[in-house]
Length: 379
Image 1 (cartoon, one colour):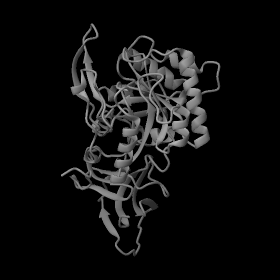
Image 2 (cartoon, helix red, strand yellow; image 1 turned 90 degrees about the vertical axis):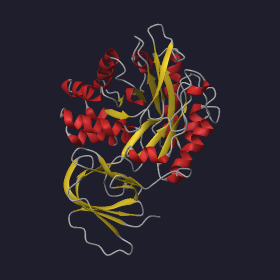
Image 3 (tube, one colour; image 1 turned 30 degrees about the vertical axis):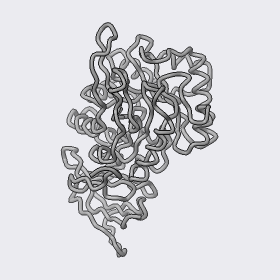
Image 4 (cartoon, helix red, strand yellow; image 1 turned 60 degrees about the horizontal axis):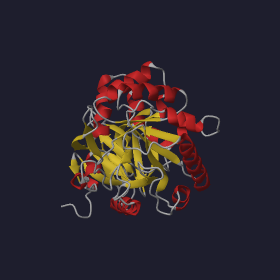
């Protein structure tokens, strides 16, 4: 248990803009948000933000924290992530998942890594499955993984990508139906996270899968939706029809947000994630492997600043892209908002949206740019 903490003179985005206020943290949760808090509590630590911006900690709902990759050969497998990489990136909550490699990568290993990061101070969940369909599970069935394993909130598949299984529409329909019911029974979202490639089919198989059913489009969370212009167009239409779309944060993000705003789409249906620690393979025109990069978890924080400077969406909406929206759609309890009763996960930022201090579940993990919270095996 960490000491009680009082933040004074914060310019609060909850993510809605509250303005100048104070925030009291007790037992890792927000106990009060109001002006002029004056309390006498043993061990109370006080941080005066001097009018600096306070926003919810980032919820990175697509992070390969257990390792990913392998498209180039076994030496291209990315290693597991360390706690400090999340702290530097302003991430207080992460959802882990497998990627292309659903053969040698283990969901039990991913679950163990999720639990390890949780012990170290990060809040974690995960998806069952992988690119392949049918994919790996822990219990032998997707619905059982979601219903009976606390960390599992949904299922991962890949679509419209040369590395996917190119499943039939009926197979997708059966999967999303099972995930939805398992989520309903266990109080979880039961979302199907869909890695999207750039094949011409786009999001159409998802539309066909729920056509004629009562399953909402929002039961899917398509990601990497700015991969190509055609997919972005499709994702905007998807959101305007009631779906939710995830943007893998990069240099294209401000332009994508400008498009969503211009099209009059519901911005609460748009989310940011990093694809952090994931492999970023490059392929030539013939589909041959041409090189590998690694996803940067700090890309969300960078996108927040880039979008703020672009000015196409208000800052409160930009903060929501990085936390409140995904926490709501994925039903992550206590996450994404700075309100009484919620977990004390927050960033203190300077006027240029650069991270200065990070608090996770009431613990000061970064102070004035210095990382204080590190993993078990970090120096």
